[in-house]
Image (cartoon, rainbow, N blue to C red; front, side):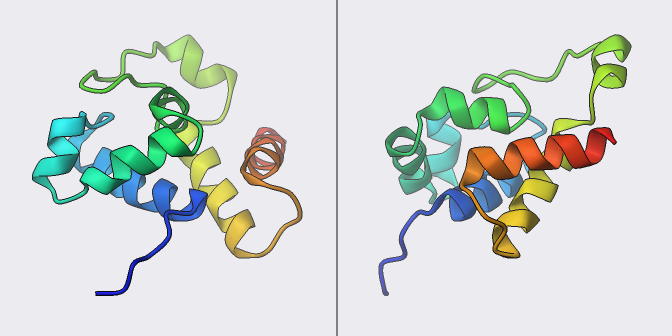
Length: 110
């Protein structure tokens, strides 16, 4: 099988699917059980697992969301921001992942 490079976009898309299934950030063991041990390593090499946990909804591995109504009303849900930032990257918008994230936040807040 050909080796596929773990880009930020590939990490985000793969992690998003696991987070959607679990409802939280996966642990290293849970990724290994899904044959995604390389994803954990890729997250560590590309900003760290804490960065990816924040991008996945601000959740630490193995925890669930506890945001209150005030948190949800203050800004667009991170899931919507993440999806919009992903599509900005796919569409070839200028800048890197952080620029896409900030642009997505601005667009969704408007």
